[in-house]
Amino acid sequence: MKLYVGNLSFKTTEETLRTEFGRFGTVKFADIIVDRETGRSKGFGFVEMPNDEEAKKAIEAWNEKELDGRPLRVNEARPRAPRPGGGNFGGPRRY
Image (cartoon, rainbow, N blue to C red; front, side, top):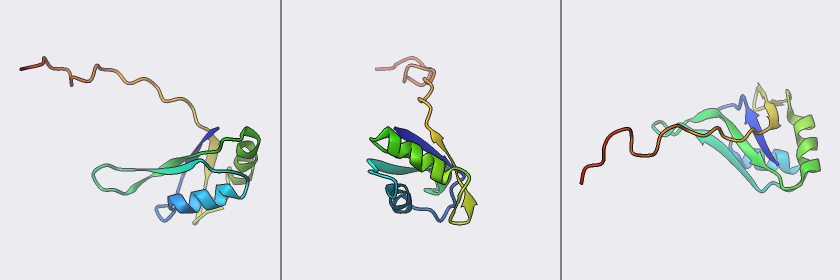
């Protein structure tokens, strides 16, 4: 199950997420989303746990609990919405 983890402190690292969520089971990956230009955290990320029961326990344990001075928002991640456009940036192809 893929979990959304929001309201992250800028101090929180992917290793911290792996460790804290790993207390409830196996963590396949932990990923903090960063701004492309600045490299700074956008304040949210994702944790994937292969076992749904372990993931639900992690949600119960961490939702609205404080990590690095911020109360987290943790829930099951929603599928990413399809993005408009065909990849040619809206203009004609020139050869």
